Image 1 (tube, protein in one colour):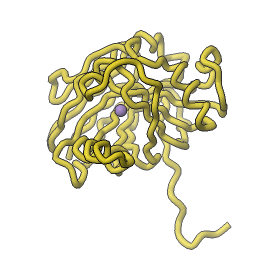
Image 2: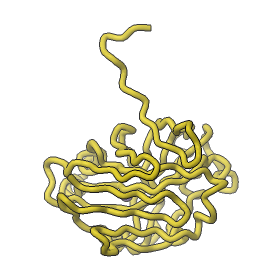
Image 3: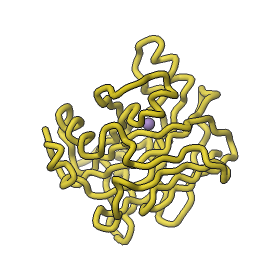
Length: 231
Ligand code: MN
């Protein structure tokens, strides 16, 4: 087969302890999945989960044991950090029952759902799509994926983000409004999950702005940390 120009390279994420890499298909993100974050965004209560996507090439991939960096994006004066647990899907499935959902997980990673909050808020106010706020280039830093067998008890793990060493976000995965299994069940009713899909599961409270020169350190206990500089 020949092409009129070179095809895009396959986007992939390293896997802890393996030479093989995780080839990325889609990136799904869950909105407002921690109660305290829902409140700080002006919402209350347990609404049904809702989803948005980022393109696979929005990833900024930290190689195992290395820091990474992204460029401060255009058009914004309010670039927010959102530290998130990322679920990596390992097999295809549709209409998955919550009790079966964990079987579809390949592993877990630490990610950042970087958000041009000013642009997202404008789009929200006008009832327009969020892509310009959420799905821009380099909006999804991610660290290496840890296979489930080595990840420990993720459901109860601590999740934290520091900026220049100062704690900005600190919570635990058991505070997710919709658990990992429930999220997979809901998502798979709307889309056929494929191996290579990543699910950013939502951020706890404490989202705030970052500036050029800041260093973000995102952690989930048991997973490879993500250290990212804003250039
Ligand atoms: Mn998010």
